[in-house]
Image (cartoon, rainbow, N blue to C red; front, side):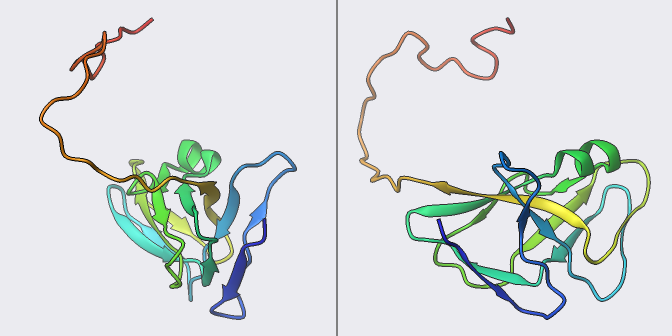
Length: 145
């Protein structure tokens, strides 16, 4: 699949895959200087790129496992959604869940984007839903093991 990527700044880095089997392509920070993120704070970090995600697909932005587990930095919205009709700069709201101040340098990998197909549903209001064995059970109702 071809996804067109526009650099909004000459210093921007086009997303890259870390391995042949990687589902997510790394997104790189593009900043004028180092960005400091205090403990418990969220900072919106630009990437300097915009994408033309094909119709019928969505770009889902996830945390990079190393950055989140080793530095405590992950997208504040947990999973970002880049719709196929959005053409602006892709930005990542990084939340510092660690107890220490963290610093992001320009060119650092800050998140990953997976291009995924989706179905846009039609919603039909009804009075009753069909019964299932689970019913309204949620939030742990199926047990831990």
